[in-house]
Amino acid sequence: MISWLNQWDVRALAGLDVWEFSARSLLHPYGRFFLRRMVLQHPWRAWKGFRVYAQTVRPARQPALAPVLVKNEDDFCERAATGPWLLALGFCEKPTDPPCPAGRFNHDCLWLRQDFQAAHSTPLPCQHCRFRELAQHALSAGASLHLMTSAHDIARDILLPGLRHPPWKCLLLCVCPFSVPPISLAMTLCQLPGLVLDYNAGDCQNYHAWLQADNGVKPERTFLTPAAHQRMIAWMNSIAAIRKARGIPQSVCYHLHDHFFHPTPSGNSPPSSPS
Ligand code: SF4
Image 1 (cartoon, rainbow, N blue to C red):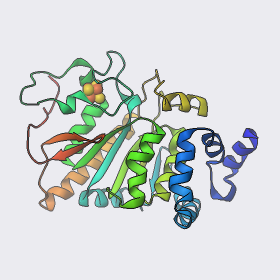
Image 2: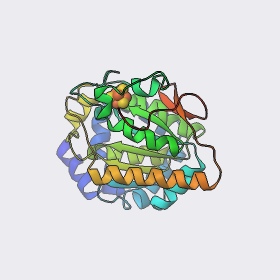
Image 3: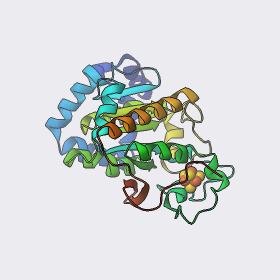
């Protein structure tokens, strides 16, 4: 049965490539939650979403980059500049040796929560953490930040609000290549535009590894390619430039609310580089 579904994915039966993932997911609470809340409660909207995914979103996918409901990278930057927008990274990017002081399988970052004026140094794990580096660029670009954990949390925190009243103009997500089809489809069903980038190292290669990570068991640390990392920074710099040209005030710090770090216009600003 699973090999049939896998073949359907390879052939993109009915324009879809999530047959195996969907069937396996129905055995777990997050899959039934998604089916009930995002498909069965909104059948007409879901039907339209499946068609859009099959006809435009899946065919538009590029190596290591999936545009979802955006024309191209410029379109994404333009939408983000009008904000609010969200940058979401996997918890699996947190450093492991030495480990993140906030713990790993959670939405927290102690570096972003610290009193920056009182801080005299950046802890060693944070100096080598990509989340910290991207947060500095994201602040200029006006992005909210989120560390993604389980599929259930992503559905509840990011996807479901999109169905009711989208809180974000667009999203920029980093996920395992294995997760790109299901998250792209979910964003399409919830009408959340954005870009999805693939991790290139340490990523989950199959459903078993993905399910382990979904429960917090993920010893490997994930990474983007250096080129993809620089690409993200270039997008955020473009967004920051558009915002500056439009006279949008620059935020100077983040505050944590309901699993999200939101940019705020006053308070203590983060240090520009680790000491
Ligand atoms: S900057 Fe990175 S290592 Fe430091 S607390 Fe935040 S997530 Fe953890």
